Image (cartoon, rainbow, N blue to C red; front, top):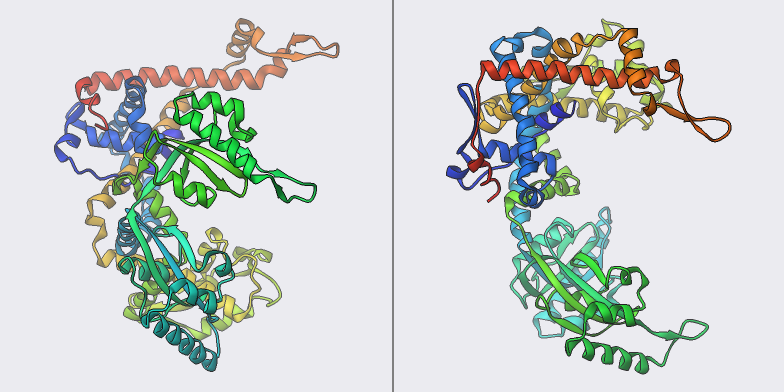
Length: 576
């Protein structure tokens, strides 16, 4: 099963060095595995490019051998036309119906948004804002008053008023008294889209000349800094805690500062930082690791330390730095820059698809398809569906398959150009979608379920019109899925089916390996398990061993039929 999952779920991994990627790494008969294909498959197993790059050549060879075995099975299966098996074809078609909408959405919406977010994340910005609260469903008179107030604030700024002073006077952000409206540094994806789009559009020193509307209200935004982003920094620190009285008030802060200054001077004069950590640091959590707190992203530290850590040079020592915890002496060991789009794509994509912006963009896209294809609800079908449910119950209270007859399942609930949504589609959709399982079955919920069930057919129609099945990436993913199914079929039907165990086999294996199967008796001694008690373990182990022997013989026969040539010199170039 590992092999199937390994190949089916392939990361999108493009290359900018085609010559390097297209080098032949392995020949299997008349086919070849390129270096690019190997890199893509290996990347899935290790998770990210940094890990893949740092793996030893032996690790890569081990994976390559597993992948060659996989490809040998695929080649054999395809040449024997196992792909024409009706069950496999049915499974592939079902996969296409589920995958095509996802691929279409990625192509039409996600890819552009990921690129936009990535470009934003190359920089980090610092901004201040003034907030005029305005609920999303505010009455018209409240909206007018809020916009008038925001316009008056903007006019004051145009007249030269200090932004921080105006923020203190007018902003309704609860943090304004502590930060004068300063939001510190942030990057793409960390704030609501309307806010960050406006902030990123400004030049340093500029403020928005019109209020920016978000779910929180109206914002007047000023950009105070913009700089290339450092993804994370690796630092160590020494903490000298403030002395406090019985009620928690800081006492003798000057003495603590002087001690911290003395430690800082020792570090600057060349004394071992790790030694000073052990001698002086009062942060017990980091003391056991010589003060090292690892790689830290922006905004994960107390702001005074964060500010210092992200402007220091690697190897530099700074201090004493005041934080709510006391005084710190900080040493910077490393920093990570923003990776390439290729490296960051999957992380950004996953974050984006969890955002409200994605949900909004997805909804808008589906609505355009409904309009394009003349989508409409069929009242008779909707009313019939409503009659089958109690409004105080939920979907989870019903067995949908049992409450509808075969004739009922053909009733049409919605139609669109060239297609229909039937009760059978609702049942199939609810079997895999749990979003509505705990919602009371009101008319609104029932209509929402129908609309949700309609999304996949509409997206599939659009996908077909867009000819996505001709896209190289789409073809590659479908091929990978087919290959996984073929290998699973070979493993189950042709290899595991040959694994036969008899009682004499089990007994013989038990006698040869009796010391492996033990238990603790009533006296606390470790004693051998009786055969019958150990039989399930023996059976499992022996099955695995016999399978490996059968698979080895099968693969050897394939290597005779399809000679394998590996270019070790090309493998050495992986991820370089």
